[in-house]
Image (tube, rainbow, N blue to C red):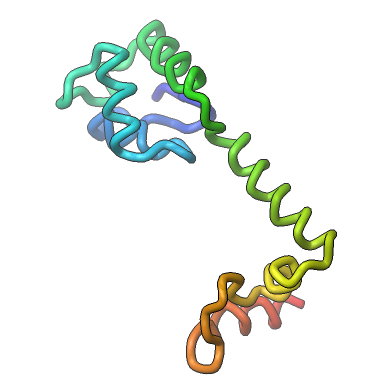
Length: 119
């Protein structure tokens, strides 16, 4: 089972679907990467050799976007910065409530209750 950017690629699934499991890559981007690496549309994870996997990983890392753990760290740092600044959005993140202006009278109760139970 090959690993690409810290994500395991199952051997029985279609390769395009498996590559899209990498955090930050969607289906269309994974199709482009597989085509550049020389894989067909019906290739599976078992067809990935070590050298082909290395090529696929290099192509994925060459994209200008952060992927995998880097993207997660970037997003968490942005949320942490909002909390440190004590902005309205940061306080909503801290309380576990909707951030982008959704109503809370009838919706989003589950998220708030889960967060309150943890505290």
